Every structure is written in C-alpha cells, then in structure tokens.
Image (cartoon, rainbow, N blue to C red; front, side):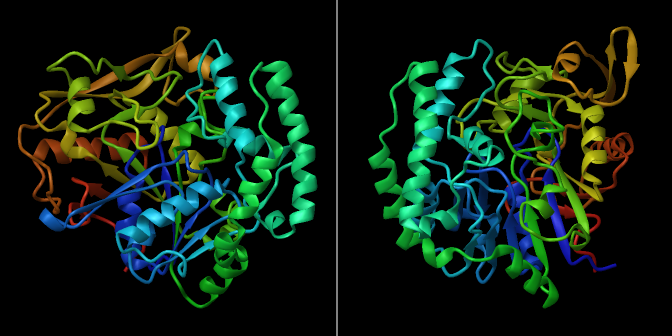
Length: 439
C-alpha cells in the first residue's frame, strides 16, 4: 500500500533523532512541514562522509531544506521569532543551501517578541521548582495566542495597526514584568522598530500554507509533517507542568497547518533505544550519568547527549515501554523508528521498564499526572546485551542476534511494529523493515 503523507512524531521527551529521519524520508517527499513549537526545538543533520561531511543545526527551518528542490513550510501552529528565522536562513545560505525560494511561512504564526523572552526568563528565575524552559519566549507567546492578544505575522504588513496592537499588549506585559516580577520594562519603540525592520526580508516567504498544502496534496505530492519536541512534553498529554507549551502529538499536524486529518496517512513514532530527558520533571527509569563504566555514563558519553538548543547534559535512562505505550495510543502510531541502537553496544545486560508500582498497585501505562509519575517505582525486565558493533549496519541480518531480540521485545511491549532502525547519524546508516511511504 502506498502512503502519500507521513507524520513524524517524537514519542519520548524529545531529542529522539527526528531530524535525521525526516531528512532520510524526504528522499520520497516533495514537501516538509513544521506544525508546532518554535526555535526551542533543535534538529541536527549529518550529511556526507569524510572531508565532505557537513553538520546542520536547525531550529525553525524544516529538515527537508538540505535536500535540493524540496518545498518547506512553517505552519500556523509554530510560534515565530523572525530575527532567529532570518539568522538561520543566513547561516544555511552561507554554506550554499538555497532557502528563500523554497520556504513558505504561514501568516497565522504568532510572533515571538522581546517581551516574551523577558517574561520567560524572569518567571523561570522566580520559580522555586524550575520547569527547565529554554528562555526563548515560547510559552508566553502561546499564552498570548490563547488569550487572543498575540501579534501574528500578517499584522506586520499593516504598520499602523501593528503599532497600536503592540502598544496595548506591551502595557500589559511591562506591568507584569515591573510590578510583579520586579525586572526592567521592555522598550516599546525598540520592539516596534526591530519588528518592522524585518518585514521586507520576511514578506516574500509569507503565504497561505493551508491552501498551498491542499493544492500540493491534490496534485499528488507526498508531504512529510515534522514534529518538534516529544509526546511526553505535550501541553495536554505530557508530564505537566514539566512540558512545552504546544501540542506535540500527531493530531496537531492537522490543526497546526490547516489540513484535514484524513490527509494524514501514516504516523511514524521516533524513539531512542533508551530514554533521555532535558530539564526538570519525573523520569522513572533515570540512571546515574556521572559515574564512569556505568550504562548511564555510556548513554550520555557515547550518545553525545547534549541538548542542541539548551547545551545542557541530557538525563539518561533505560527504555520505558510503559511511557512509549502511552505515546503510541495518543498518536495512533503506525510504526516505530528506533534510533541510537549502537549506543547500547557492549552493555552486558540491558533493562527495560515495563511498568511501575504506584501506591501498592502495578500499572503498565504512564500515569497522566506528573505527581503520580514521580511516585512510581519502575519495574524492569532484563535482557542480555551484545558485544558486537552495530554502528552503521544497514541490514536486519547484519545486527547481532541479541540486538534483534531486544528490538523485537520493544516492538511487542509497545504494541507497535518496528519500521526503521537507525544505527548512526548519516542517511545510509538506516535499516528499513517497513517503509512509511510504502511501495
């Protein structure tokens, strides 16, 4: 069966390796679409080999941009820092990637302004228990959107109206900043001047993304919808309040771009062969990452678990099947892609969290509330590891028997078939069992 449109979703706490998989799948697509989050997301792509190898770090621009001729879209569900977008485009252009003629930005994107950043940082500093925000203004911008006071991309094209709206919303935010949070106000004129100064550069890329995607789909183009962050950071379904401010689940691909859900044919869930998390919040299968010669240290060190955006060390732990099972149901996963299998090479015995003990009861599904999850005691199943090197292997038969057994066990526990296994950062370091686009 041929699938025309595929949604790529992170199934853990983000950082699952979605960028590489989106780039790899783009070989079969004509368009790549971002549908939520902002520049708090980070995708790292490694393209080429040897002296020709190049690493791309993307935050806002869809991962498909490094493929020639691919159209890229930023949907209305994304909150947009225009200055960051233009800087990211400039960086890509400096290494020969053509962006402006292939990128379309929705006029409905809420704008991240300087006062959002100030608010984000001041509130995180004031919290007794830190959420772990990136301080980039993402949350306050989404708050303005829900409160119906957000400035959107289309407002920029009406300078007088924009100035009036900006003055009104800044009166509110500066009151909160100075009177409640006790920090300096943000200057109105500076915000206005900076915002309007970028209009000429942004304008040629702004277009009706919903209409463009409808037309592309009608024309038979294959579309790839690229999620940011991960399901367990979803504002509704994640470990609240230790979550991001947007919906990271597959259903947001429709709402965040303006396509109907019937357009989405296949949902691919990306998951590491172990677990990581950045920032605060409960993490039942967490391991010590500082002690040498331990599984947690190996995950952290060999996996190079440093946040693309935050530069913070990621917390590491055993694979959590109970959490993945929750993600699978929320997203309606069609298939799984397991990444970073090679990071587990050489660990004598592997453990899988299959469920938890909570208040004397055994449960096999991640609890809805973070407070409940924090009280959960993980239940582990042990499996033998493997000593062979799996890095770069691109056939199922080439994997060690114990690695295959591990993957099959994850498939059974999570109730979703494994479609792809990634054994390294490059495009050809990929094992394909069931191609999401079919054929």
